Amino acid sequence: MYFNLNRRAFFAVTALCLTSLTALEATAAADVLPSTIAGKGELAIGLESTYPPFNFQDESGNLVGFEVDFANDLCKRLGLTPRYVPTQFDGILAALASGRLDVVINQITITPERQKNYDFSVPYTITKIQMVTRKELAAELTAPEKLSGRAVGAVLGTNFEQWARANVPDADVKTYDLDATMYRDLKAGRIDVALNDTMVAASLIKKADSGFVTAGEPFAPQEQAVAMRKDPALKAAIDKAIEEMKADGTLTAMSIKWLGVDVSK
Image (cartoon, rainbow, N blue to C red; front, top):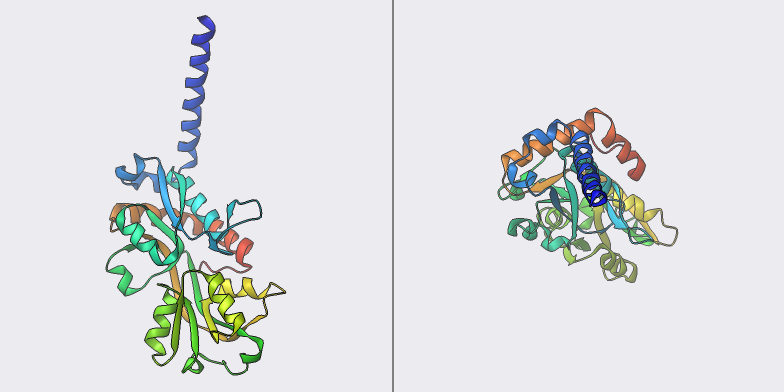
């Protein structure tokens, strides 16, 4: 009996210590976290898990990438445990709207249309659109205007698709569920060019067997942020945590680690 009481006491003290450590890791951002989120103790985060170098699975099946590091640090500052929910991009904002996700951290570009339905944090990356094509077409695709009349690939629901439809109305825009499928079509000649983020394009081109090159200069600056349902208190807490990450150099270090450059500003 004495042993059992001591064992119970040990576990109680251990649990208290772990809780205290989590509280110590949390920063001032946790102080403004809404009770609906704080009470759960976790943050349900939507991402594709197939979008290197931002979020993807390594050879061991572990979820890694710039946005995974970013989300882990964000949750630590908020005093929460991250719970990742892999979701295809074309359904990721619908999953957020339904309440299945608390936030989306998947290079979601801030647009006026999206802002009608969702709140966005302060940006954590600022990038541009890059054209990716086969080597034999690079000399022809020197600027966005050259996309006219071309078969252009983009992942469904992305800002890349929206930009192409709005700015090159006579392009044949073909949409895909996954980047991998789009690049297979590009290699096979079923599309002439793929539109993607500058950092994703750079990561792809580094692969010796990709057979792809970037075409023209990057264009159309984009700001990416954490997307959430309309919730001023949650936005304030996340904004505060991101500003802390910028101020102490954490965000810059993550960017250089995964992307080779600082795209946080």
